[in-house]
Length: 607
Image (cartoon, rainbow, N blue to C red; front, side, top):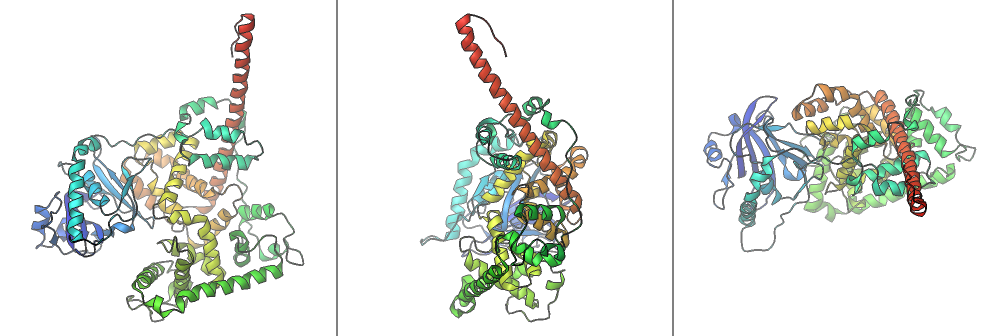
């Protein structure tokens, strides 16, 4: 590996082991950048002098050195730059040490690295260096957070070695920005976003009198992610404004969930002899939202929820749709499966190998994916396989050809696996997956704009619903909500047990209360641990560790119940704001009339 940059003084609080934060590349010809944290005791004896000599210094044109990487027993942390979604690079303050936290595209958050040295804080140097290989955009919510864009460097025809050219660009960038380092490290407090409430978006909302109360709440929620939300009222003004609102008085809302799932026998009663739905679609969605489905109903009901079948179709029409979809899938698959020349290309083989690796890491404890009794057709894979794993791979490769703009992105195998098990059919699994991806594909955009928009909306939602908790999140510097990244990316796929994930997804697909119910699920999980966040967790790394330990220990029923109640509370608060806004508007009109009247008769009229 080629050593680009290294800095000592970084350690893990979990183990209290100190090491070097390091930026490396595999070769001069192919600048494939890695970020690593290497414990001091794992640095090879022949390399330690190089680390000390280059400590905090960017390697010059002729000084980049070959070093050996010792991963130990996974103590060394090493990831590819292109696999990173965001970096949280927080300078030190009088109270806290500087820290670096890395979030991967998969949603995993790596263990925080803290800076114990009294030397110059290297965070700005690290940002400047990495920015020359892949753009790092400062997050609008947190000045310490950076989101990684697409790779900045691409080899161009030139007489100069591309490696040297890139190193020169980095050095120039660091010199150019050196004057900003002191200012950038002087303070690390997260700029406080202003609560998004009234102002123009709400005025537009108030003109939409034809919306019902759930549509109004959803419409208002849409405003949270839009530009200009920062011009709304501050939370303290909102609480005072709504203190006497009748909508917020009276008993607290309650959830409507029951736990008698819809059976196959009951499902059949929803349709007439021709197989047409004979009850309102909204009623079916309400029942699924409140009760869920028994396993043997899902293979049919999910096709409606995901949009493969129309709710108005007959049994014969659905069979025609099914056959048409099967034929269409195998035509799509044949584009690559039957073309030897495509399959021989390096681009195809690299993408296929990436899919293979992800599939072999997906839900291997499930019976459908557990076995490895078949030889693996990928010569680079050293493990066996089974028919279901190979079918999953074929579906994802076909999707890569179907959606050429997005292609395959890590995390998609997590979304496909439950669909494949429930559908039990390759073609129908593919179309169920494509319909699901139509809903969540913005989660996988390369520029992370979709995830950023959701985190921004969630940030504003917490401000709106619980200003006290939000202030606490600011104090412990997690108001950027990056710890929620994986939850939203793959819809809590890794947080709940298998059956829980399936139940959660079918409830979310109903869009019964709102198409943003996933945000209220997230809010419910946070709210469940509110007291812990307010009273016990005081450090950034403590919160991350606590949140990561929730995986597999979140109560789904309690979460669903709380999420529903939170939505009703949100809807009440929106209606209270509408009512108050109408009152203020009426008073303003009366005051305007009074001013005109006073001018005529010379008297004083007050509000």
